[in-house]
Length: 489
Picture 1 (tube, rainbow, N blue to C red):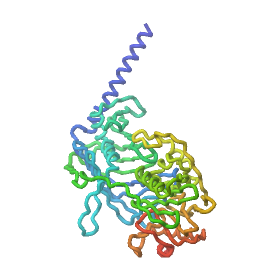
Picture 2 (cartoon, rainbow, N blue to C red; picture 1 turned 135 degrees about the vertical axis):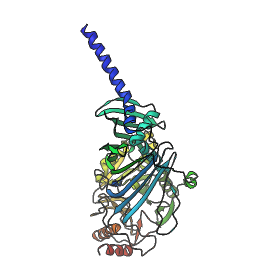
Picture 3 (cartoon, helix red, strand yellow; picture 1 turned 90 degrees about the vertical axis):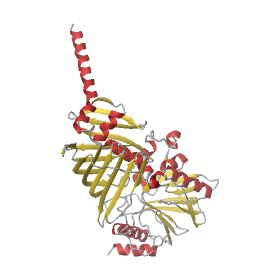
Picture 4 (cartoon, rainbow, N blue to C red; picture 1 turned 60 degrees about the vertical axis):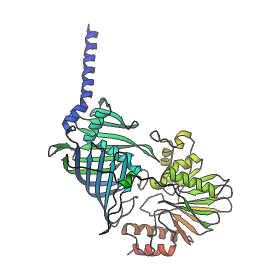
């Protein structure tokens, strides 16, 4: 009899737990007013962070002050508009990210299958046209459905499953047929945390975790007073909420220019810098190709898989019948590292600073199930060769020198490439010459120019041409020297 009683109690307990789990979504819907809230707007301030731009791979993303942050969303149309004003002084935070000075206004929009940015007008000039940004559509759409009310609505519409978890009930479902969302709903029906995963060309299935704390009543809307988001384990957003409005007018129309946008083909332009040396441009980030006696060396495969594929293909076109034996990665920042897995799949040895070895080993193995790349399919082994303060690649005739840029606050692992025969220095980020020669650098960029100049002097490099990996032209030490002198004033 005792066994039967215990068994019955166990069944009752299980039934009670299942009921509690299935009720968790409805409890959250009631607590957060999900059914009555069709549109929502919240404002706040705090910080966002330059994802993929840390000083070393083990450090957090660099913070940027956010003076104001306003998110306006329409759940019925699947639309969201985020407007933020960021601020930076004369000194950038340790690490990377695009330098700017003063205030910077950003407007980021998503609606259905479309994403775009609205660039600010310059002074009294007409507003520039919206800029399609299809690569951001998934991340922004998931951010919409990761808001507390959005998560509950998505859970109710996507056959969510529930189970007991630490802190409450875990609610899980899939949107778009492949994108998993998991959240924790506490006993009060508040969404404490939402985890999603997005595809990243470097770290693969990257977790985006948003945590909500300090729920309170904002004029009849229960909403958190603080939102903290992490990407790949480091904070990417930290906003203190000051105001929330339910059901404001949020009408977001997709501009025709965005709806009709077709991504341009990847273009790789070449400029020969000497016998067997080519400077590859044609986009925001540049590369270098060097022909050796029986192989090819490529410096940087940036941006993403399509760009990296085009760079590698161009290298083999310029130097037919020779393998790409080495790919030098200048540093670990994600915009310059976006195609590194394509280089790994090529079978090239990856040459990097010694502080990056563990990170690149992780990059080689990280799962890419959302959007598998060629390396995820081939599962090739990866070869990594490290450099300390100086490294040399040579075939007995040509020598390529790799030098660590010391005292550089942008990143701790920056390798600049020097070709003694051509007296050519290739460098990313330290000095991007303005489009118009003679234009002063903005204050946050000036110390980087001085650091590059000081390192050239320290290393006693005879440099006649500088090939920067950003910008629209090459430069020389004379121009760099002027920029460096400005930075010391």
